[in-house]
Amino acid sequence: MIRVIVFLIIVGALALGVAWLADRPGDVVITWQGLRIETSLMVLGAALLAAVVALLIVFSLVRAIVRSPFALSRMLRRRRGVHAYQAISNGLIAVGAGDIAAANRFAARVNRIAPGEPLALLLRAQAAQLSGDREAAERVFRDMASREDTKALGLHGLFIEARRRDDAASARALAEEAARTAPSLGWANRAVLEFRCAAGDWGGALALLDGSRNTLDRASFRRQRAVLLTAQALALENTDRDSAKDLALEAQKLAPTLVPAAVLAARLLAESGSPRQASRIIDRAWRANPHPELAQAYAELRYGDAARDRLRRIESLAKQAPGNIEGALAVARAAIDAQEFGKARAALAPYLEAPTKRVCLLTARLERAERNDEGRAREWTARAVNAAPDPAWTADGYVSDHWLPVSPVTGRIDAFEWRVPLSGVLTAPVIEPELDAGGTMVAAPQPQPETAAPAGAANAAVAPAPAVPPQAQAETESEPLPETKVESKPDIDPEPIIPLVHAPDDPGPDGVDDSEPAPAASDHGWRKIFG
Image (cartoon, rainbow, N blue to C red):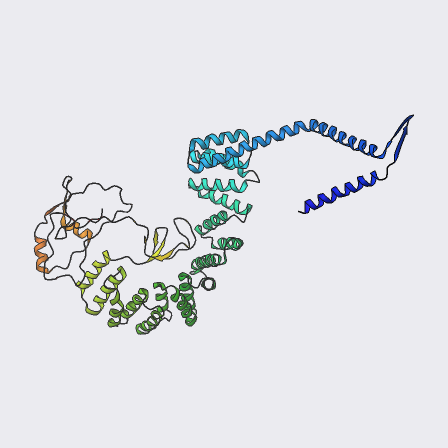
C-alpha cells in the first residue's frame, strides 16, 4: 500500500511539472560554431530524454559484451555447482541406504566435478568406509584434517578409524588434538576423559571436566565430578588419608546419593574421630539408596562396640527404609553376630518363600549358629545354587565385586549400577524340556548315539543331592553306579547366546525327607536341561 501511494505521488509530481512547463512556453536558441538551432523548451527536453535513453542502451550493450566471458564462467560454475549438489545429495542418500555401487559412482562423479569441496571429501570418505576400504578412508580424512575448514571432521574420522583397528595410542593422540583445536567438541572431550580415566590420571580428568563444564548440564557435571573425586580419593586412601578424606567429602556434597563416596567419607570420618558426621552422611545416602556397603560402614562407625550395640544401630538404620531387603539382611547379619536369633529369623521370614542367594546363605549361617544343624544348613546352601541372583555392581554386562568409576568395557564414566546382573538383557523365551510324571526329561524322538556317563557325577554337577542316612549312603557307595544313557535332542536353531544349565528343582528345607535314601539314577539321564 505504501509503495502504491509513493508511486502516485511521483506520477502526480511529474504531471504537475509537465503542466507547469506547458503553461509557460518559451524558445531555446543554441549557437555553436556558426550553427544556430532554435526550438521550444518542450522539444529540447524530449530530445535530451531520448539522448539519455540511447546512451543507456549503448552503455548496456557495451557492458554486456565486455562482461560476457565472466558471465559465461559464472553460469558454468553455477551449473557445475548444481550438478555437484545433486550428486552429493544422491551419494549421501546412497551411503545411508547402504548402496555401495551407487555411493562409489556418485563419489567418483563429485570428485570429477568438485574435487575440493568439503562435502565431496565427506562423500568420498563415507563411500570408502561403506566399501570397506579403510586405507582410502584414512587418506581422505587426512586430507580433511590438513584443512582448516574440515580439520575437526577429519580428526573425528581418523579417531573412529583408529578405534576400529584398536590403536588406542593413535586414538588418544587424535582426541587430544581435536580437544585442543575445538574445545567445544563433545566427542573429543568425552574420549580424552575416558582415556585419562582408563590410565588413572584422575587429576587430568578433573581438569578436563572443569574446562568443558559449559558443554554439560549442571546435574551431569556435578555427578561426573563426584565420581572422579571419589576415584581419586580411593587412589589416595592408602598414601594420603587426609587428602582422600577431603576429596571424599567434596564428592559426597556434589552427589549425596553416590554410595562409594558416602561409604569412603564415612569410614575416613570415623577413623578421624567424627562418627556423628559419618552417621549423618550414611543416613542421607541410605534413605535415597539402601545398600549393603552403607549398612556395613554404619555398623563399623565405632570401633570396639559390642555386637548388640551394632545391632541397635543397624535396626535404627533399617527403620529409615522400611520394607527394603537390604535393611532386613543387615539386621539379620547383625542379629546373628549378637546371637539374637529370633530377630534374625523375623527379619528373614518375609523373604523365605522366594529367597535370593544371600537370603539362603544367611539362613544357612543362622541354622549353624542357632541350632548347629549342619544338615539344614547344607540344604539352604544347596538352595542358594538355584536361588534368584542378588544385585551387584554391573556395567555394560560386566559384573564387579566392587564399584569402579569407569566401565572396563566401554570406558563410560559412572556406568556401574547396583542391580541384578543381566536383568532386562536376556529377553528370549526359555525353552523348558518336557518332563514325565516323575520329573525326568522325556527322551528325544530321534536319539543320537549313546554316551555313557556316571549318573552320580551328572547329578553332582547340577545340584547337591538331598541328605542321605548313613546306612543308605554306605549301601549306595558299595554298589557300582549304573551307566546312564544320555540322549541328545536335535539342534535348536538359533543357538542361545549364553548357554544355561538349569538344575533340578530343590524342594528346600521343608520338602526334604531325611528318612528316605537318595533316589537312584534315572534311565533318562539329567532331569532338566535348558536348551
